[in-house]
Length: 124
Ligand code: SF4
Ligand code: SF4
Image 1 (cartoon, protein in one colour):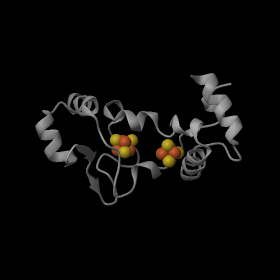
Image 2 (image 1 turned 180 degrees about the horizontal axis):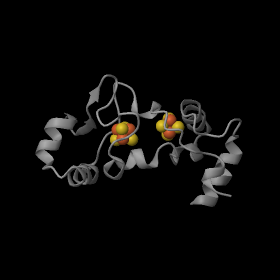
Image 3 (image 1 turned 135 degrees about the vertical axis):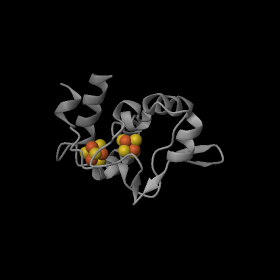
């Protein structure tokens, strides 16, 4: 049993859309800076939105600034994007499971919460 049995990304881009996107921690910012080969200051000015302690990707035309028919910075993307949509909170809360599986078409149709938890525990 593996995660591929219950989930496969369809590259629909839905999770990269919206007026708020992913936030970046310090490691994410350093990884992005290294990936782009650009000083963090310049990366921040060009691509990030800073509000108090929260640092997020800028939004352009309703999607993450790095979205263009798919993520254009795969090796440099934030950890939350790497993890998505297999969020650990889905195991703890069936409500989260419902919300996330209904917004991501990559999950197998008719996947039950119990089946999902079994696969995730095997994969961990
Ligand atoms: S919403 Fe799901 S299937 Fe679509 S790109 Fe995001 S992770 Fe992949
Ligand atoms: S960094 Fe990539 S995967 Fe993450 S929201 Fe932006 S385009 Fe999507």
